[in-house]
Length: 448
Image (cartoon, rainbow, N blue to C red; front, side, top):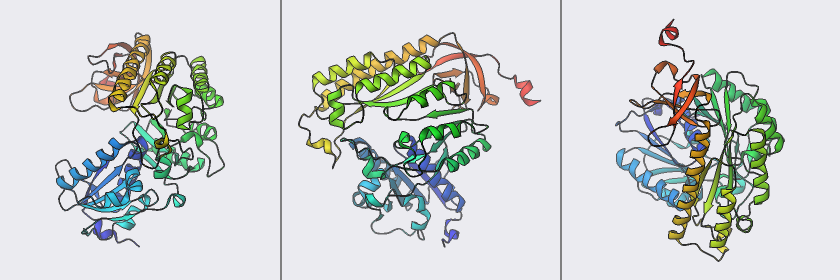
């Protein structure tokens, strides 16, 4: 039994690096500590506990993790420092040796964080608790409130794909998931707390069902029935797992938004083979065509890695031509990073950092052009937008169903409300369209 008395009146700060899934899991850890009596430290207040949830997707991510830990140790002298997440699982001993770190928890341990905190006594050196890859088995549920309007629902964890450049399967273990019944319950809870939008997250969400004998399509249909949730967005889903039946269903669903995020990673079949991806460019192009046929206005975001080992100049040019011809909205561009222990290190051809940067810039320019053209096409249209409370002094913003970012003048009563707007021209930095409110309740009506 854990003695929660030691946590009474203690304060904590949380720092998350990496993906939406990490943010969701940090939020769950925060709730665990809160239930035990720990409150979140106020701005400027010295915390008793620091929790860092790390990422290890690139070498830069590892470096950012170390910097974040050093910064928290310096800003919160004497705090009990806990490090978890992918970097902690992959390099527990390295992390444990960082000055000020007390506890390192791997993928299987982080859900039981309270049991490892002991009496919050600092040690000379950090203690690391991790499990071998084959023993990372359990699925820790997580449904976090990103802000007042959006929740992130973790439906799946781990990955069985072992792409040649990626360490995620080593950091998070094999593919596993929650049951549809338990996930529907979490969505109902989010609705009860006033949530209007849920982003479905995981490591490889299309692979959902490995541990329960269900399917991702079954999950989509079940979540669509939850009353109170007005919008669902499907986060990154592998092209070979995005079935035509899912695309057709989203096209006719009231709650699932016409918004997809699909990793391409390389626009050359030769490079896709080197990466050990499970599709080719023809399959990818057919998925985009299918989406656009049934949802012409769908937003499609695409991940691309540049400068991977084996990506010759010729293969990169092929990729540029292929991506140019795709009817997609935005590219998320990543520079390839060498990861210890991955199969990609055996590939001969290495791309220089300067060349990676050049390729990256070229794709980012292509992305900007595609995104602006997509926004431009919608100017003058009327669309529903879920508005969010901004930082003080800024206009309110929100997103249309197809993920166009919109700005309107601030009105407190419109926070977390869906309102119809007419889309106008770009704002100053081209990050959003300015919009005119059409059917918002007047402040008078709101208070009656």
